[in-house]
Figure: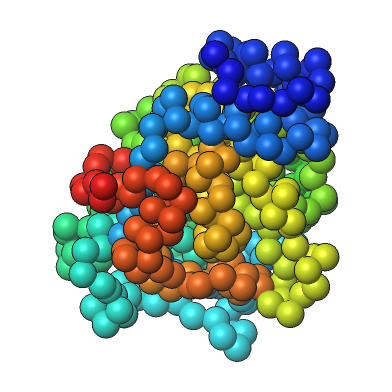
Length: 368
């Protein structure tokens, strides 16, 4: 039974609402219509209905730490302000032992996950990337390693001559437990050409995750929105993820990433609106019926909008992070990390139940 009271709801929205109430899958046309609709409150209520059906009032977070071994990158993606050329001022490539020292100096009690991404540095061999994980795994065996994007995995196949599966198994042997979701951007080869996404194409991105799922690895996936893509491009992106999930059931969470400008001083007009961010989170929840969680990434949308997102379909508030660099290099104005107490406060402030989790959404502690 619908909980939505909206006497002005048009016929098309009413049809979509009926589908949602009955657990029916939304189509490409439905998703595009939702983006074109101005009825954001109905869209939010529908997304909230789906989320409550899946997760109740629980909202998940993790004590994690973001690490970046290198910012040297062969790619020149138009939206990236993190990358550097080898030898350029500010470029770096840390050894495993250097990263261990950094972690020892900055880790906070309770960290359960290392979130590791970085540049596509072709000045070092594939073994460097394997050894980097092995060094962390040896020193911090109790911390789960979630590392590398599908685009990085594709890059590793090129510099090593190994297959996707061979690369993944070598990294698993060094301690890799899950892949990050980055590198998806928008899953359209036309978009990737226009935005100079100099890395894995659509098919390769999907194939890396398909292979990871095949060998028993559960992964994360993202969508970077807010540049040149159309609403149809965004919905097509979600549908491709949904179809792979139908095939493998290996994705744990979908993370809509709001595009950041290249400067912290950029005009408000260069940033996505709060309206667009909330609508995208809600539509993600409605389209991706076979993925349990939608993440509200406070690094890109801010803490207060993250609170609002928890009633627009999101069930994950990310984690403590400690010090995020990629979005902040691109102009994010948000905190670089939050404490456990701050995350609990944020979630309770939205009328939800904070749940500390591990990488795989196993519950560690519920803060009623």
